[in-house]
Length: 120
Image (tube, rainbow, N blue to C red):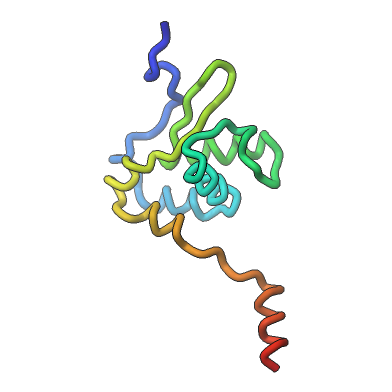
């Protein structure tokens, strides 16, 4: 019988991960959206994430997030289920994930241009 440890894909020990690595992983808009979706869902397989990119691209982004220490991925049958390593990340980088997830998205350029037009 396989244990949970055997079904977990390789991931780094967060004690060896630099903050720049985590920030770089979170800087990509698709990866940030994945993290927000996983935060809301708790855990999810690749195919359950509503993203504007193909499955292979989602898999690539999840791998990048896993290799940077942001998510943990486990095998459940033929499905890879991912979750945020929230508690571990908060111990290593206190408040980082809370700040990133709580940050408001940037205003769209078109919306800013429309606001300027209304002010004239």
